[in-house]
Image 1 (cartoon, helix red, strand yellow):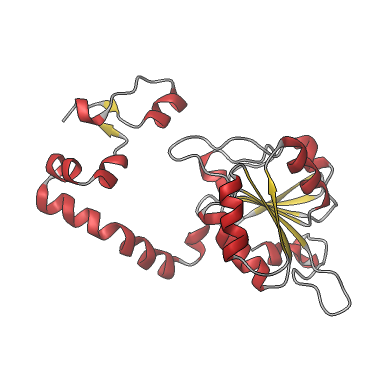
Image 2: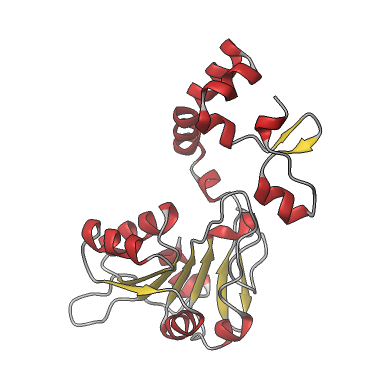
Amino acid sequence: IAAHCLEAMNGGRGKLLGGIPGVLPSDVVIVGGGTVGINAAHVALGMGASVLILDISSDRLCYLTEVLHGNLITLISTPRNIAEAVRRADVVIGAVLVKGAKAPCLVTRDMVATMKPGSVIVDVAVDQGGCVETTHPTSHSQPTFLVDGVVHYCVPNIPGAVPRTSTYGLSNATLPFALKLANEGFVKAVKQDAALAKGVNTYAGHVTYEAVADAFGLKYYPLAELI
């Protein structure tokens, strides 16, 4: 998506993500080294881009250097490091996730204003509030908008662009849980499966996920106290 948005006809800088012999590749900055971050890095590195990943965990960064190969740089995530990386970037990918909670805003409007015109931001965290201050949800039919000359791609359901693949993938991951709920009933299933219990957000009129309760200013009730 970022490579597509960088093309001149789509409002981008007109740069090829991986460059060509004798021409520098694009600089891709990924904020967050989790599932989205590592997969974005795999794709960008595979296309020949220069990739910088920022994360708050030094252990995670060590892991990423072991499993990723190519023109990769890792950096501890601090406001100063993010600001400098964003300023130099051709592409910024927001890949920050706080499970069950609103994403923290790590890339400020002032940082966005320092980016080169035609640079690209893909905020994958937009479905949880976004980690870039200038983002807001868009749609597959109108996926981008400009702020300070920077192309923003902020579709909340990016996998919806490939519904066949994403549906099969989601079904593979969730069907075992659905079958367990159907065969054993809710209470027995969550008592026996800790992973399933962690996914319960509400029960019996109460919020049973602490991050959700905090986000909406509601009282949190541990699920174990209700079943």
